[in-house]
Length: 165
Image 1 (cartoon, rainbow, N blue to C red):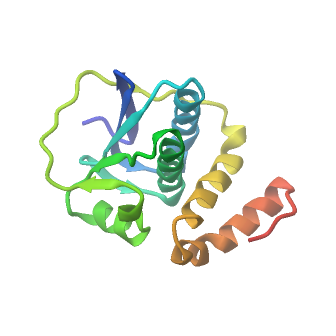
Image 2 (cartoon, rainbow, N blue to C red):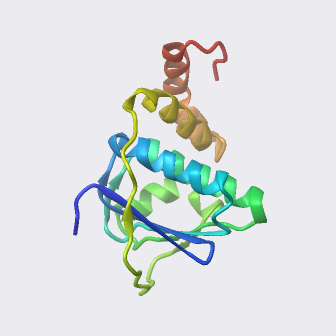
């Protein structure tokens, strides 16, 4: 298994993301760019997110998953499918209310073909990506809003925007 990497592939308008290892904000710029490109170019109608080999996922990347869910719902009222065994990552998903926005499968034996790594992009936009990801998380539940509102306020100050949560 490659460590700390996000892979993806597209097959007949279905995008599969595979998150391997410890997925932290350092993975977010390329992941965000790939998500934006796929949705902007109308390349996907379904999304599968494979977290079976994910050891840890931070809140920034959880927020990017929430953005995937929001975008997919806007396109065709579908929920992304998440493959995740009942482990620490599963508990994180449930604590963020993902079960209300994703179809979570805990015991799936699906295998995927060759996948490409998401590219790395300019690190200068990382604060904006972290802000947008956390804004998506707070839209999932009140408990998420309470958990992340101070971080969002700090990021907005850092980026020079006026709106506070």
